[in-house]
Picture 1 (cartoon, rainbow, N blue to C red):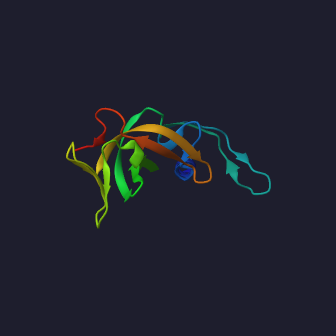
Picture 2 (picture 1 turned 120 degrees about the vertical axis):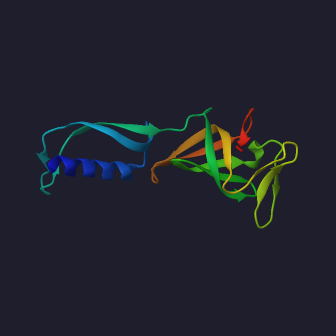
Picture 3 (picture 1 turned 90 degrees about the horizontal axis):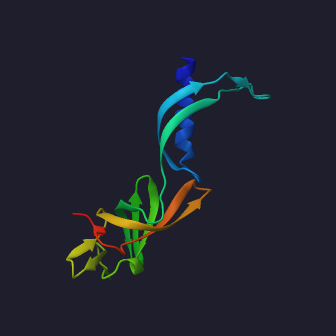
Length: 154
């Protein structure tokens, strides 16, 4: 029972951390390798156990090509979600040959390729830069479509 409780606390702590500077987003714990001897914390009576575990992480890198789902279309660009990264911005300046079309369902339209970028469309993009937001424990990314085979995925 103690081991199960320790693993539950590890998973809870893991879920709350969201992202770290060095490794990116915490995605999953794959294995618990060892649980050390517990130490009582002075003043609280809580017991801490050193735990060695393996896990899966995800970090955005400049130049990496990824997929994201359009969450919102704005006049100056598009907000995407590329799980687990929730703040991915595609500027209209980084979408060659696309023009903004306003209306009830705003979109960016490419007349040459007959393609459009609108809400809930999957887009293939390249990461231009990232920024870590420590207080939110997440990363922001600026992305573009300035290469071959990038854009809406059919």
